[in-house]
Length: 473
Length: 90
Image 1 (spheres, helix red, strand yellow):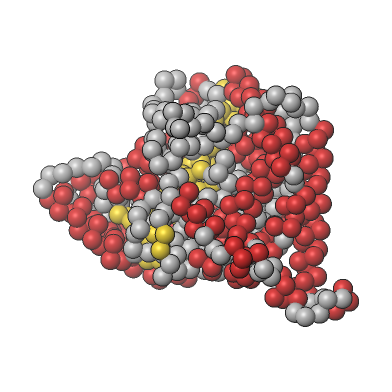
Image 2: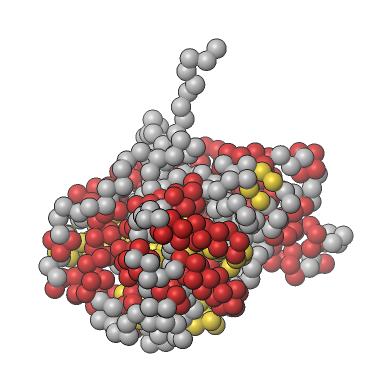
């Protein structure tokens, strides 16, 4: 396997080659750096290519391997982080022009943990400005420009973790770190055909991450498969004394029951119609496959509660609180997202009492969502009801449909895995989402692994990229 | 290059570190696009769009608050804040 091919392979395929010293971490890092500089720039997926740091880390790993020191499956794997995570040696721009020269004096905890696991940081990856928390109507709301989808460069990657999804899909990195407040891991994973895990709120420490919504922000991996996401989660999860919101619960990812015995609750999207019949069929085919494998499938009905409204109140209140000085400063003129021009004034529609009541409502919603998991092991739904939108689409219109499960699950801090489950007529990935109970990443990952053992969708690569397999199914 | 410590709290401190007086007197982003004209018939296209966006955002949030008001929420419901009182410090 060449270093270029290895960049598009799974951790399970590449890890043993590195460990047996049949694949050089330095050669792998060099291949990644070269592709980031060319293809990464073309896709607008990259903010900073970290050549010096990457080569130094890769050489250190190579030396360790020569001396017999083994750190596990991430040793020598090149990866990138969404540019809202601090890393020494590069600016941390938060996707926004006012922060283009912002530097930090230490690594984010996630970056520290991945270094400890032997992974090699090669790039800071592009994102929608300030993680899109104030709303935006164009893909161009990023300091690096609109991120292009590797499956079709005239299409968007979705946001806000745009670069993480594009770089992973295009095989520029072995995996990437992303973040989600509401939809920023699931939608880009679906649009770009990668596997993305949004962990339980608090599972992964946020020290060194930009704060958008302190009660809703989560950090998670994007990778080639559910199995790879599981490996990365194992490396980054766990309590951090510098983040009081991080959970001390151990990341026990082993499953006791076989996922084929799972009871699955299907949440169907109401409102927006699948624009592409094949995309709709891809989701339904996945359900049929799961039924054939022995899963018990039933329709799940979300509690009739104003999830999206409450999520909106919480997000706007916290985001404006986090960025109030910036929004009311002259630097705000340099911001690109449409919502940043109105957020401060619009937020006056919400009183302090409204925010407190929204947080009280949220507790009730958490409990109601938890009851669903008395009936079902996991919930299965389309990640989004459509495929990658054109690069110049009006996103206010394109994303005007309801997203009750996204709102409910993010308010309740529930984990969710997005995996590709087929392709549209235009050869664009279709995403399926598996949502679990709090701290039950192991179940969503187990079901994702089961599906990926029986299908090849996650092995497909965008046109012109090295392919691990050509099939579907 | 601006330097700051990286914790989330430090990030907040950095944002708050901007001179308060400068921020208080700073024009909003929109105003640079608005220029010196003030009458609605003379609004620039950018300012017109901003006002439309603002009206839409405000209406949406008001509607959200209305939905929230329709929900039965016990007055003593836990608002899920994480607040730990400092103990043992005098």
